[in-house]
Length: 240
Image (cartoon, rainbow, N blue to C red; front, top):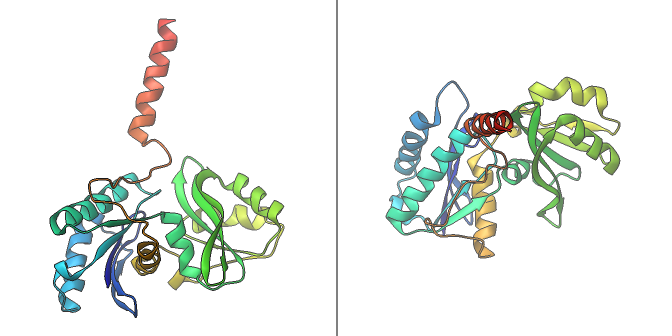
């Protein structure tokens, strides 16, 4: 069995192929490129280097959101296109769950934070029990202050990771009351390898959907949608 995994939910673009025995290939870029420029060439490259035919894959795992609106659309459109063309199922992986899975095996609580702008983060709280990822608090959007308060109330040692760490690190350091640390650089961003590993688990559990069914999970309205809503609200207020 082979899983193709895609993650373009944030600043990182990442593609991987995994079997039940090994991570066969992974290609990750986190440097000054747009996902529309990188994702398909990266996919072509790892298929070629792994000496596979794209039709050899059994399913497509994709980081399904939340995250960058543009990045999620690119990843989902790529997964849907491949799924429709190859008649393969989609395995939607919650973005924050996939990010947490980078720290597989830790006995600490895991807190991924992705920059959601407007002084918010996409986040969740996780732990590993009996070699499986357990969700303590599911992925959501909230302020970093609300998140730190929630962690302080739980009272567990925590590892932070994600692209929200550099932005909010000082506030975390100032407000955390429990022991904490930050993940090292090779574990602190999205990786398609983690999406593939979770995808294998979800596939065995039957947590798949057709390419027609797949839609990204945004959690919040896009900036354009927010601006439109604000304009409509202002217009309606003036009319009254």
